[in-house]
Length: 298
Image (cartoon, rainbow, N blue to C red; front, side, top):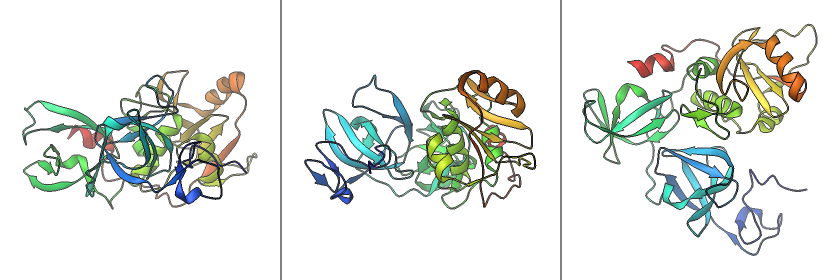
């Protein structure tokens, strides 16, 4: 059996020591823990800047590094196990234990506890930070930056409803491999929304369809519900109710809400019919106390 290279770290010259006896490689190593030190780091399919971006890693995200060669880290994301190449310049060996996560689609980091000061960088939903103290409306981070405190949530607190989180990304540009407010793709939107609600959520569409949620029998008795996932080959969207679909897509080149029936007709003409529908157990279905987009404006 061939192991999925997206989820298992191995190549000809180096591999995860846990894969000894399962794959062939010249060398098996224990990974070293690193942390993403930039707002967002592309995770590339090959060690070159013009290679396709398969996913992204966010500020504070822990990473297992198996090899650094020619400025590229062959690495695996700890949160969703995705494997790829990350520029070594995006990583730090100083791993800080996170206390909070960014709970809005996008916020800003400052060098001073003053919103009139120049921000140094944006940061995005599900990024991880370590808070030292709260000074007025601003939280001081261990890396000496400041962030608006109400844009944070403690690590163990989450939004309640993935569809509500996903709605905050309407009009976000479509970006293959993306999963931030600056740009995301269909499965990146789903993963971001469910991770913000505390779910261990796979990254790619086929992973979501195969291992996330309960497949539903598609017949005339099926009534779709909020947070159900609808799949096509290579595409996924999240239902807002029994008829409205929210999805990031290349037709509109952004995240949109549209009638499911219209999306099915349009997509079928190009890529085929719906391949499955899944329902996720454990979704509260209740609206959170305030929506992420509203929180970002506060």
